[in-house]
Amino acid sequence: MSERKRITKREIAERLGLSISTVDRVLNGRGGVKPETYRRVMEAAEDLHYSVNKSASLLSKGREVTIGVVIHEYPSDFWVQIASGVEDAMVELRDFGLHVEWIRVSDADESSQKIILDRITSGKIDGLALPGGNLAYVDVIDGAIDAGVPVCTFNIDAPSSKRLFYVGCDYANAGRLAAELMAKLLRGQGKVALITDSWTSFQSQQKIIGFREELSYYPGVKLVGPLKMEPEDPNLSILNMENDLSTVDGIYVSNAEVHSFAMSPFASGKVLIGHDMTPDVLQDLNRGAITAVICQNPRQQGYLPIKKLFGHIALGEEIKKTAYITQLEIVMRRNAEFYI
Image 1 (cartoon, one colour):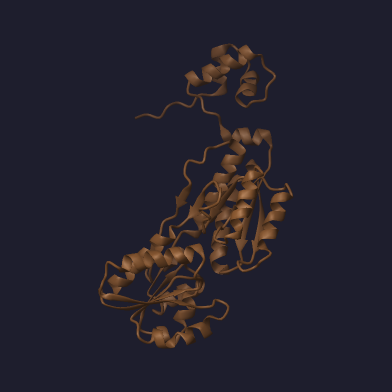
Image 2 (cartoon, rainbow, N blue to C red):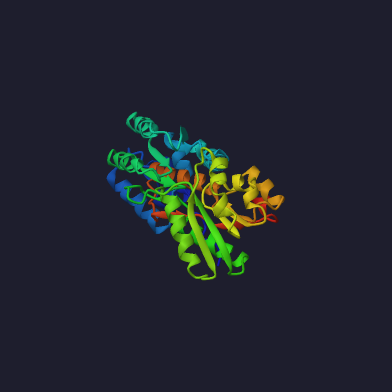
């Protein structure tokens, strides 16, 4: 099927016997034309299937759209990848008026809520993209939405909030995938330790639920844990797990500390599965200390929220889905170089 010819303003103007500038004023909402002229131009545009060049429209309006982007400090290697996705969107959209205001917070910082609230109430941002997870953020998100500031979540959702949409992985499915991979690598027999760093965070709960659910299909694989570690002192936490780890055949690290386990003698010779790619993890995969990690496309998690929010704010584009789920991919030594 041949592509439909793109209709230009000149063709509409010639059809109606009007100047191109008059047609341009109508199609770009600049006013200054009679109601009858407006009606004729819009009817002709519809009949000819004319589509407004949104990029040109944005350039002509010269409006700047500022989006606040909340970035966590830990784990730093992972958030650098998300920030790279945000920067991709900045490069793509900066000529059309996009400005990004970075809001860097510590995940454990009690003042992070106030920092974000201050940005919202300053009136200097037109939209906000932030990782959910922290229950205190629900009030922040809802307050921003009520104040007319569009908000989306990325990487970690806040499903009980009024956020417009979420971009990130399905953490329950990530847990299921880890369990399926572990069980098959163990050939359906053995003991597996499940490691977490939180009993309450949304993503940790979802991974644990998914891992347990999938493991139930493999009755020959027995679960040890979940075992809780403290990311502030991972080496001491692992040392305290020595008795449990010595009895298992596989270890699933559901948080960001799979590298710490790869450096431990207690994980030696065991199937070790974790999440996300970093330079340290790449080295661990190459030397055989980590069996596999599950990646969740962090770059897309930075890019898509900005792209969608900008289109919604600047162009009035409809948000068609409440969740944009990123792809989960199993990464092993032979394909690891493509994920960093």
